[in-house]
Amino acid sequence: MTLDVVEVCTSTARRRREATRTPDPWHAGAVRAWVIRFVTLYVFDLVVLLLIGLLMPQVSVGWSVLWAAVVLALATIWVKPGLRRWLGSRAERSSRGLTRAGAKLVQAAVVLLVAAVVWILVVVLSGVSVSGLLWGWIAPPVLLVIAWFVYDLVDDRLEAQTGRLWDGARGGDTAGYT
Image 1 (cartoon, one colour):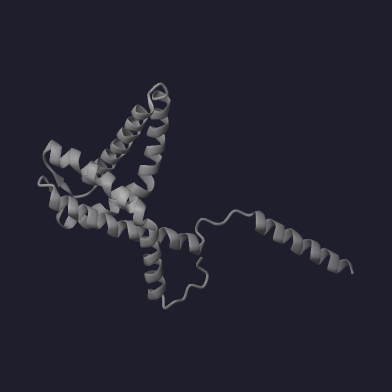
Image 2 (cartoon, one colour; image 1 turned 135 degrees about the vertical axis):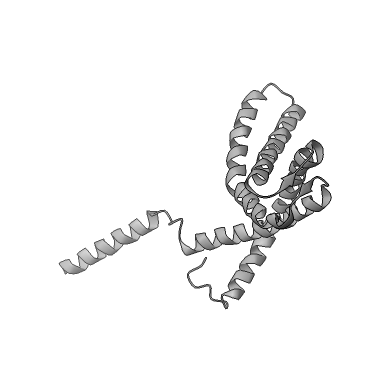
């Protein structure tokens, strides 16, 4: 009888620990979600960079677009949110006395500044060649902002489709993945 009480208490304590344990960030489902997000963003960024190369006469992407898309995807996932949060909080403090329109203008300037920093990272860390101030350094960040807006509109559908392709490639085996 005492063995049953100990066993019940132990299993209850184990269930309580498992319920309060934070999920492992390297859990297969979390890794799958990050891989799907990265692959989706990579393909989208590949198209965006090719379009920037085609539309901007002073931007040459060539074969370096493959690496530049990796840099852009990583910068979009890791650098953009942190930089936007940091610059946004500073801008919010400095724009407290502004009108609503002025505050929106400051927010737009922050988004453009973040896009400019991301574009500089892409150019510096990849083989993208840029010449000229307007078509090489000012217009591409504006196109990045437009691309980010479009991606925000379609990312859920793109990631869902990528997930279906991922699962199809695995032969429909999604055991252990959530």
